[in-house]
Image (cartoon, rainbow, N blue to C red):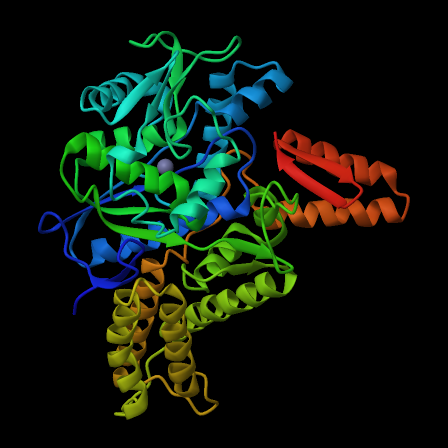
Length: 477
Ligand SMILES: [Zn+2]
């Protein structure tokens, strides 16, 4: 059957038809690495990791590009605070982000381009836009002229006055139209800067994703992903500058946007200060549980972060893992004589599950529904396999083996079976949590010798324990 995807551009589900038969090209907007990434930053890569696995299962060769915005105001600001070079600070946190992704079982992207390594491509594109009359220079800055692109606003479908009022907040009187956006910014003292035809400067934010996606994927690539907060202005601007530059459309065939994460009803955001980092979430609940929770809600629906939601995810995952262990155990027991067939409803459940799982994923990559298929498979097979009078016959063994390999295969498409070995410490999140709890218990009993010994042991493994007003936290050095 066809894969249907909800395209933000057309505002409806469309049949996915790749640009090139057998190949899929994906660009996902990445992070600005200036601090530990928060849990909202984990949603797009985990979702796209599953989409990529599923497309591969469907026989496509998949190329996935995710950028690092390593030249940015926030990076410069934090670097001034820590005394580091901005590019050194962003390189450090980009590395930490990649470790977070590995912890969550996300396969590395095909490419992780960084802005700082693509300045010539960006300058070439800005120059091309100036030459074609789509951009203009103001002092040492270059702006995109939205009036030269009549389709501006087609992705976000925002009323013009709404876009205008947003743009006016930071209105620069020099601009021809308040919505014009910077492609290149003249250098200010203390900022990273590169030579350009307009003097020393650095790229505006939006141009990087167009320049890098065009370089790695070419115009008209298949999927562009990111959080819903990027629809306007980031992706709107990307369309305008890329289609104006290439003179062809579409720049992207399908725009897919992941909804945000909420905490106690509020959107999680740095500005609201209710942010949980990926590391904190993984330390509290384990990376596997965090991944499982991220997949338990369809990517276009908001997802709530909280003790109850993560505990429910932990229980759901435990149910699947325990079942897998039980089935493996049963299959290691001796096969009994006899011709006992497996009940019809069990073989039906097994034979239908693959189709139902695939249908769920074909319907706009509905991982929540796909997980539901796994729960039902487990429930239906367990009614038989875990019954008190269960006897493993030759036919039963064949059926159970099929059920197990199906559970493992389909779960593998969602990436839920990975092991949690943590590379740099050799301690898993569970082990670290257990040690932190032991240390707390020792401190309560005023047994500081033991508490300090545990702290030193964690420190030797590269883990720092911090006592904060909100409780004890740990982080990797
Ligand atoms: Zn982007």
